Length: 364
Image 1 (cartoon, rainbow, N blue to C red):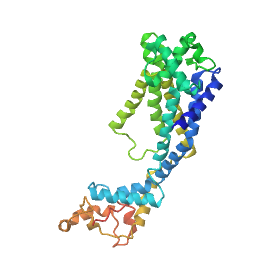
Image 2 (cartoon, rainbow, N blue to C red):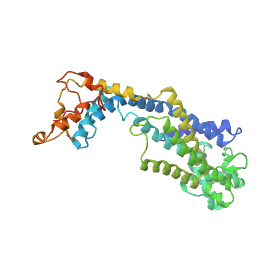
Image 3 (cartoon, helix red, strand yellow):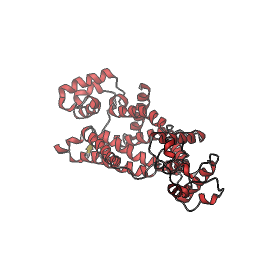
Image 4 (spheres, one colour):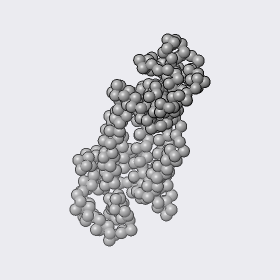
């Protein structure tokens, strides 16, 4: 992890050196976030391609699921999953391939988080001994401003900028980041909670964090492949609100610079997904195309003929021999429109007069 810290720390320092006089830390942080998004872009391409391939397999997978529709017992579900996994293998698709880029990105995101939290280490280039010495002085000068340990370097920058004379000997020759945004309008090293102490403008940061996270994920989802139901359940809707709210809470409790970084990330993630959807569009299928896929699937499975009476009234692939005697001719007639009858050799029955062209799974 130390290698990642140094690499991204070096990148952050370059961004600050370039934009120190062209907008300050806020613009430098935006440039840094953009460069990191570019670095991670190949992993995102991998995820998009995996989603694209999964979407292309949707008609065949839907045909398999329709074959087992209405049967919820464990044996039937296992058989259905086996057929779906076989389809994936034949098409060289892995539903877990999209998870690998996420796992690779996770330590990178942690490294980025630490780089933002430690400006004296990665922008000023101070070693741990010097930072410890500055901390000891800060405890005497402004102990109430040190705050939590995980944000101590950001708070030290604020203390140094306010009590410069006390740290003159220790910070001589080092660049101390300036966290002011739009001149004196906002100090990004301050915690937005201080909005209640007369710094009302700080409330912009947690509000922006919430809005960018909430609307960012909603808009991003419109450009992503969504397997399964298009409408999320109530639990998912709650989570879609809770997570942005939690991000806003953290942005309210931590230095404003952290909330600004999360806001940048949410916006850039949305822009990236829009770009990916244009580069590698997710295929969509009409009802006619789905039915055509069902017909093709039915034709492919004619090598395993069975009679309609084998399927009548069954809710499971597994049943007793005694159950077979209870099958009635009336039930068999009801199922005639949705199964193929290879005994009469008439393919027309598979393409008209029924709700589906997919024969129900043969029962054992």
